[in-house]
Image (cartoon, rainbow, N blue to C red):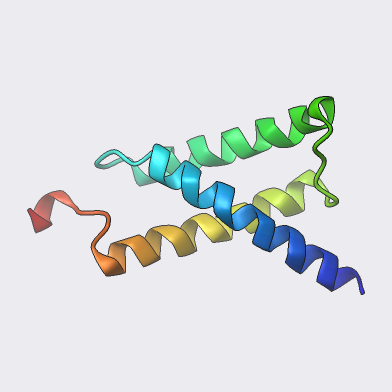
Length: 89
């Protein structure tokens, strides 16, 4: 059941993605912030094996899942008002 492994790994990415989205939150530049979060995830993937941490998926799949998770987290925070926009102040 390969899909179950991917589902579990995707769920394990949710917490770190959420934390990174929050850390990179400054007003404006949404695409640049998203790229910064993905860059950190890419670097963690590359360096993780040096620290005994490996994700059992190909890097491109991890980044694809992380990309979608970023959108979900940001949209959720926008809906609940956690993130505000200039025109909303």
